[in-house]
Length: 441
Image (cartoon, rainbow, N blue to C red; front, side):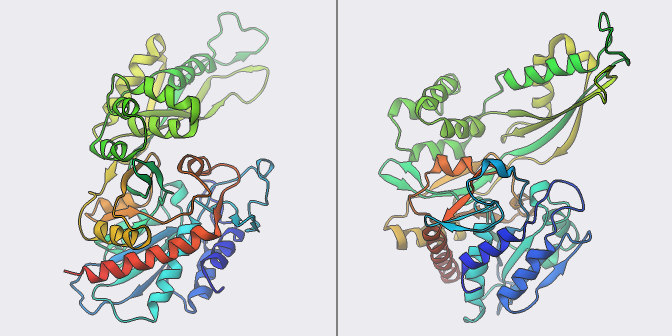
């Protein structure tokens, strides 16, 4: 493997699919690939058989100096092959793109950061430690990866600064394409809704206590009801950079006009409208529904999973109050259980690492403009931010895939990244690293 593209292809072919079960993932395959790529084994962590993460370190000359970590994850989500035009685990190159599951989430960045780290291994000693960490289990919350490492090996994986996901293409800015730097993320608050009933024969539904019925109404209400809005400072900063008509920009930061503006944008750009909605609203998405076990038996138990995502300023009370409002008369028959929670988090768009990224953009684009961007999804950065680290996602992409098109590929069909974007991101990250070292206090 000579470059980041070779490594990306190998990581895709490894098929480290995380379906949420403990024995999935198989990240050990990509840990072995990285050992081959770097020419030496790293420090391996394996909290469950096959669920491996690996750390490489270039020790700094000053043990007290601030550390910088490149972090990528190795697992990918399951795939429906029938929706793809290329083998999702073939790592094929076609039309100037590498195709495959994980090509944008986030094996592209894992490979690019590994390439920059390998180049730096033969350079001069940094002042503070430089780390490369590739983790398992990001796609199911990090219990076998980042969360495990932070909770059990903090001094080993500690870093004051981090570059990780999500690296976006440029957004359509006021003066042209503007780089987007991911500075924060919404908080996942996963819930289960459950209803109980009385079993009976499916041939006699009159007056039956069918557990499925109230839960079906509840799921329909969750999916179709407007949700609370919060306009964050990060969102205002992002909107200010956009090359949209003044009326739309005003509407995107006005809670009273927001939904109308989103509907207007959706006419011509539905995927960007979806992103805008997610970055400004509590979102609640029904994802799993289970009831009954046989066609002729009235179910006595029904369960639905809800993927709720909260903005800063929203909490569990926000979700409970919203559910109580929309469920109405069914609220008494539905129990609500919080399954997983993590607060929204962000890093300020200021300071040493932020300015280093702007230095690198200026070298490549001739301008220091950048849009601080929120991701509606969650990343492993949250575990380090809780400990005070500054974490961003940033890269440099060609113009063959737009910001909205890029969003559709996360957990979707036909994930792909251009060869040019891989080269640009490796160059950009290398320059950002050099700028970071120059800015050493």
